[in-house]
Image 1: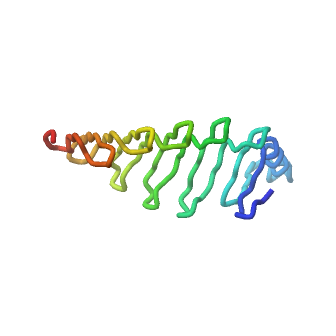
Image 2 (image 1 turned 45 degrees about the horizontal axis):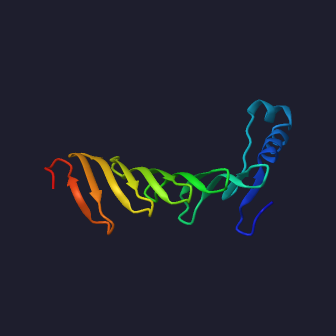
Image 3 (image 1 turned 180 degrees about the vertical axis):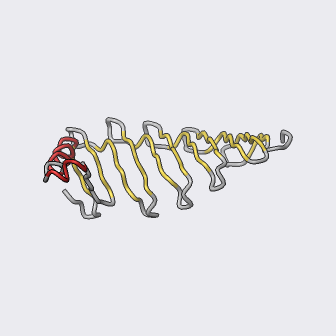
Length: 153
């Protein structure tokens, strides 16, 4: 089924059948085993129709892979930023962001933990000048920090 947004919604069984059908062509196609499915969004649903996996190019056209729990809540996001840097996000059972692992365009990794209100509370980064650790308050201000290559503040 194609939704009004141009997404393709298929069940796991339908996906297997589609792959089997597409690969059952002539002998050359069987040898190559090449199957191409083109869509802006592909959703894999469980037998009850709940989303479990979604691969999409969201609004900014960057690829995003979402993994959903059994209730249909987004729990894991694997993506790239508009600059091409990788990002992995973990979400709680309410769908709020709780932790992320990302990399800046220059290759510097960063690990961030958020509280139950999705406010960043602890950030650990590795930069060219060294490691950086910061703790934040309710307003997003830094309450304690060891900057990269520096002394505790």
